[in-house]
Image 1: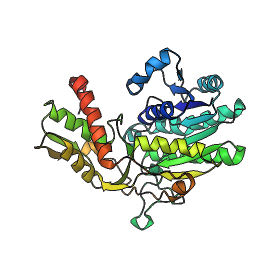
Image 2: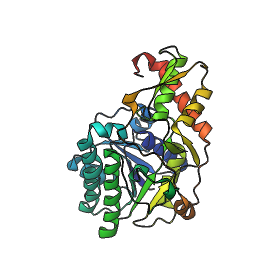
Image 3: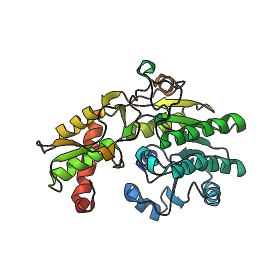
Length: 335
């Protein structure tokens, strides 16, 4: 039976990956989380954790080498999905040094720990499409060889993550594959991201908790949306279908639209029909990655993966996630 280590299991992607592996494999899952991580996204897995049924939680931090060595030694994984990160682009403008330390140095610590312990699992290092940053329109769609032009401290940190992963594969022959996943969303998406904060505000409007006004930032940026449940299936296929050491892939959906058009879709799904929009300067980034349209031909050719969940279903499921959360905790939520 295979053993898998997921760093960042309490995040949107990590929790959905655990769900996918429980449903589609017989693997034993070790999930790394920080001591202060909220358990909301994995609350449905805690019964398994308590009964030692295929899911095991291990506490650690990318900034603590001793904890990483202990976790890797204990889990002894065949596969690793390194998803843990300071993953909020807007937050990175306010906390750039913490972002660099966690995402760059933390990834280096993590990969070095496997070398120290002489463990050689297949490792997925998760970078981001944000590494491409401000891409000229003539370079669309963005393939793997497009130059990096990061537009936030988060994006800079993910350039480091990407290059460290590829370096360890080339220099030490570690079985590492790196991804640049484009926008992926769905239930459990953090409310610092545009589509999730819009869905949260709509759910609060529907319950009469706030006036029918959605506060927005830049609505002009172009994004290509995928569902998180399609994303984790892609990650699984990448490590299990003839994986190649040192490869790097762009992965993303097929639904291309502006942030404003995405918001229109969410408003159309709402039971409230008198919603207006208000621009909030606090929601703008100093600079933005305006054109995010991927060329995923390399990954599709290698794995046969293609997105299956429609954009409309993704948006509806995201909105229903916030409706459920707001109905339970609405008076404790901040717009």
